[in-house]
Picture 1: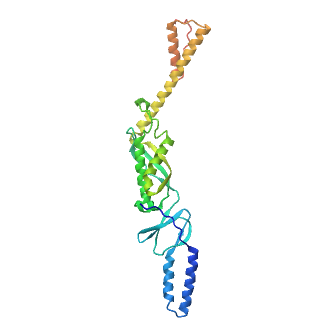
Picture 2: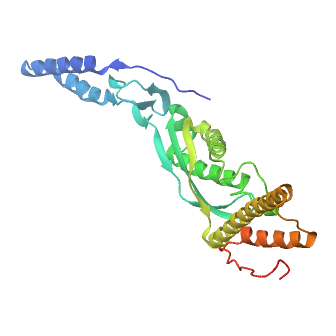
Picture 3: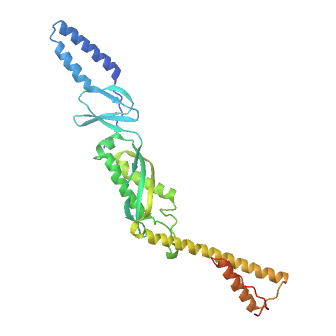
Length: 285
């Protein structure tokens, strides 16, 4: 397989002066009636096609009747063989925001996902000749990499079903971005393209399950909050009984302790303010 070959052709400004001198010479010969003026004019006109301008972070791939001759990467004005074909390939960093794709995550849930890719060409030979259209190649391979990545990780963890993955698409941003960048780089290496950054630009459940998954997330959050509330309430009741017993404020039998625990748990775990009832009689009433 051929590799990229960097060349620095003839300085364009020097050739511009040479052609200008030939053109003046041809004019002088025409005035003098010398037949040699016509071939000189023809050479000057043909030579004008040899000038090539390379902008910063740009390149020109040179071909001579289908044969690769080299790549000009250094910016400036140059002169090359007038019969060279000069294909322009940008070396600047480019952004690519993929379309939102509907794919299934690791658990089979349909999700919508897109990626933002920053890339640039590093090998002009591979970009020009190893793939048909390197820009379209970037788009297609990026979509394929995103589909593969989405199938490797779940959208989120659901402890109630026993799914406790360490890496998820929603929460593990850095890990998922690294995996996506590596996957895309492997696919685009054959086109001489370097991936500068790859990250998820959009992530959400598909419309048909979005409402159900939202309710599920809300229910999971409520259960987790209730668990914390009950855990705190039990600690507070335990502390209250322990302090009452140590200070001898009141002597409670098991039945009264059970009633007190029940009342305190209701007050502490309720999501509404308690409405106290004042007992004007004895503890037994």
